[in-house]
Length: 117
Ligand code: 5GP
Image (cartoon, rainbow, N blue to C red):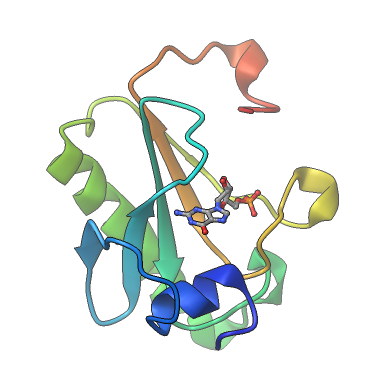
């Protein structure tokens, strides 16, 4: 659980404010925000990449999407936010513990779709 930075945050080994938490996931502000709102929704279960999720993780994956919507509501950005999962190093994944990025508070053009950084 504690082999990635998110595992350490979840284990309480690195202090971090959970802006949302439930039985299956937590949400934290990204340390290096790429938008005025940049939140990470992180499952308590350590799945390295989205592609490593199994059929058994179906409910958890659905839960993460619903949690992202709740966090967006909580932050007042439910009408305009972008949800991103980077899968693999080539796609920009740097922390190998599955997480959803919620980005909001700035404009997004189609051209920015490929890379939000
Ligand atoms: P990835 O590139 O893997 O999709 O996203 C990892 C994200 O985690 C990056 O946006 C990075 O800024 C963020 N991050 C890395 N280390 C920490 C940390 O210790 N605390 C927080 N809150 N965010 C982190």
